[in-house]
Image (cartoon, rainbow, N blue to C red; front, side, top):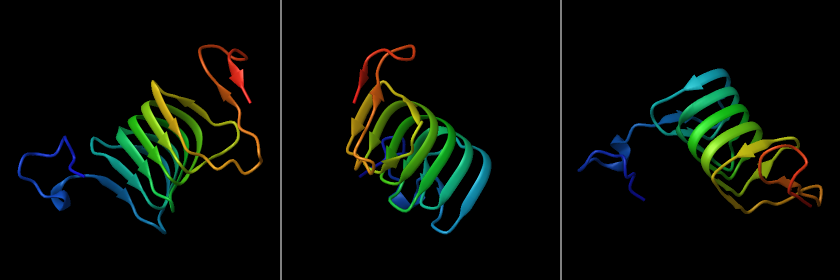
Length: 125
């Protein structure tokens, strides 16, 4: 898959990205102008154009990004444009997105989604 933001004629290896490798644990604030790829774990504030959490990755904290794609574990508060989730989402996680695609395995047998502004409105179980 080619990155639409990549310069013409650049190879995939030349596309800039911020990578947190498997086995790496980052704690604190991370801001990047490049797409962020997490194979390890991040705990804290994360801001960037896109965030991809691999199956081995975990992100928790306050996250602001355009595109969120996760096959790993996420927790905290997420402000995103689009979200594609196929991993696990911790209890009390808030995801605000214009577009949401869910493919989750619910461990406890229950999933609660709240749609729309305000608390308590539009709940689905």
